[in-house]
Amino acid sequence: MRVERSNRNISLRLRLAILFSLISAVLFALMGAYVFSSLESEVSHRDDQSLLGRVERITAILNDNQNIEALKNQPDLYDNMMGNKENLLWIVAADATVLIEVNPADATMPAPSTLTAPMLFTVATPEPARMAWAEVGEGDKRVFVIAGKVLTERNSMMAAYRHNLMVAWLVGVLLTFVVGWEAARRGLKPLHYLSARAAAIGPRDLKLRLDERSQPHELQALTAALNLMLSRLEEGYVRLSQFSEDLAHEMRTPLNTLMIQNQLALSQLPTLEGYEQLLDSQQEEYERLSRMIDNMLFLARAEKQDTVLQREQVDLFSLSQQLAGYFEGMAQERGMRIASQAKGVLYADTLLVRRAIANLLANAIRYGEPDSEVMLRSVVSDNGVDVIVSNQGARIDSQHLPRLFDRFYRCDASRSRPDDSGGLGLAIVKSIMQMHGGDVMVSSTEAETQFTLHFPAHNNERV
Image (cartoon, rainbow, N blue to C red; front, side):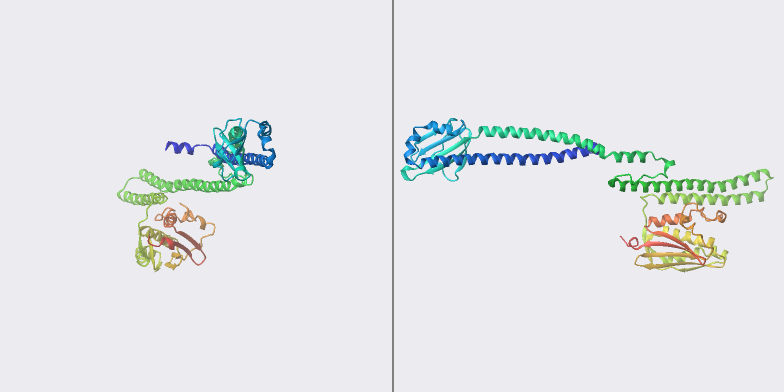
């Protein structure tokens, strides 16, 4: 675990420099291997051609039988032709008699009986040597011409060249690491600038945005994402500030009412009837505070990601009949009627769905026109199930519609009533629909106001 954490803490600059040097090391190694192999092949090819040329020249001389004795008596001629002490030459008769030998390295001569194809071969006696041979004449007049070259000098040269390549490879890798370090530093400057700009933004500067056009193309997407995050933070910060203000206002109203009532009661002569009226009035305010606190606790718990829904089959027809019966008395007080036409089946949390529809019905009855009808119906389609609650009443202005589901928001504060939900009823409906992966929509015309709960089809299937 410690190793993994240390690897994660490696700076991006160091990672890029190491990656750059590793790539360069592989490329340099492949290039060095190719150059070394090409040079070695070229040197070997030239040495082989030189050996074959010598064999051909000696063979041409030996084809003139009149010069064989003269050549035998002049070995220094071959010694001069060889040029240095690494060159070898044997002219051997068919019976393995050595006619001419030039062997300054004391190499072991290969036996004529072992000379078979190919014409070029390598031996290690005692030093590694490259040899070429040819057969001249026929029968008893056959002779073998064997030319060779000791590979000690060539191997030493190639070893030195290999060493130089390794040193050059190591120096190249170190240089690429240094260059990569500096290149990464320069390349990451826009990222450091972006980080500094983002770090300088505080709660009072949430309206500021980062300039996408001044960033490299690769960082424009990140800059756009940061700007989007700042927009969400600004919106959330504004909502939180508004929520705190609204909460204080909503809590202050019943508390002020309670304090005023107590002050009036203390300033007057106490009577039994006065105490009863005071307690009854205070009870209403306590109930209002209790509903508000319960609703706030529900919203706080609903926002948790680990909230588990108790999903089961919900019969909309049966649920709508129960809710219509429950709100019948409240509707009759205002001369209103509830028409229930909801049908279909949902796979959802029964208690939460009941609460969402109940909040919409209570809202429709509270703000609907007297002697009108509240309609509860459903629409089943391939996209899911829509539960619709509509009522006849005053049209809601379009500027209020996007904020109806904000906490404590009311189109008209004067419409607040002791039995309402404290401005949290529609916010609870929205939270319930978000928990089910659905949505809540509202539309309002002169004829009616309609709230729609949309349950997507993929969330209504049993898992």
